[in-house]
Length: 189
Image 1 (cartoon, rainbow, N blue to C red):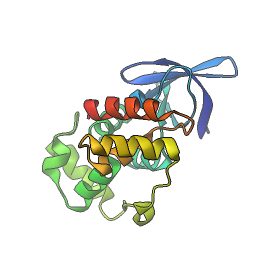
Image 2 (image 1 turned 90 degrees about the vertical axis):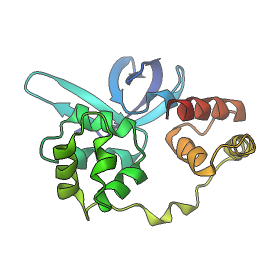
Image 3 (image 1 turned 180 degrees about the horizontal axis):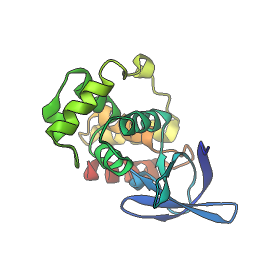
Image 4 (image 1 turned 120 degrees about the vertical axis):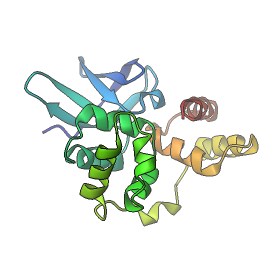
């Protein structure tokens, strides 16, 4: 079973990336491909989806997102593409809160999730998912701290900035590159 791929990003599309791993290009569907840029070396956690008529990789920038995706596709009536589309429009914490608070209204707003599917997700996952308590201290390098400070001074919420920094799977970017990546992510959100 595949766990992750590490390689150079060679293409970034609206819903996927292509990663070169030792001369082999892997096309990976993702909820947030905009956090990657061409030429960047990245580690992407993957789930290998095999169906009767197709197989493909779904990628994640964190193990938490991968775990949530795998639990979501275990829910009755939720397929991999529906789960991936749903994760594009909600943070992990918001999703877990919606499930734990039985917020059918919030889940219905996600693409491909109707009232029946939202109720089924809550039924299958309530009490199973928990928000990590120890996320309070996010360790940032100098460039990340400077980008966070600059964006905070421009009026962006610290929580939103930190969420974006967590999704950027590259610690070697400059302050300007972090600011650019974070602004792209916030604009799409």
